[in-house]
Length: 71
Image 1 (cartoon, helix red, strand yellow):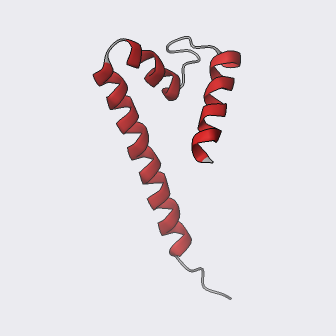
Image 2 (cartoon, rainbow, N blue to C red):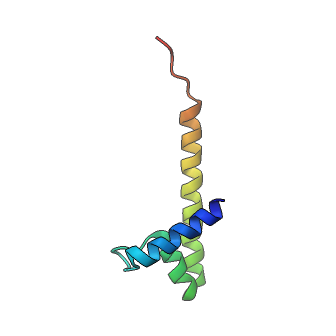
Image 3 (cartoon, rainbow, N blue to C red):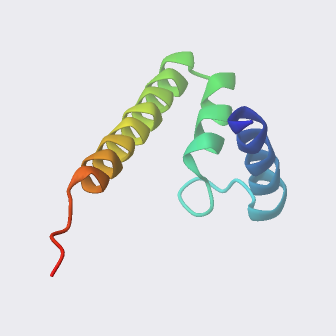
């Protein structure tokens, strides 16, 4: 389901927001454009996105596990 959602967001972004580097380009669009040219740049951006996602998931997990004392 997540893959389908990601594909839907990619299409909407490329169709409506455009793909102007430095102005309206998002990281998934940067990966898409760099895969056509330099594969290593696209791979690097993809790895950065995965690391950011894992960092956010870990932060949410840590924040959710702390119990708030009841008054």
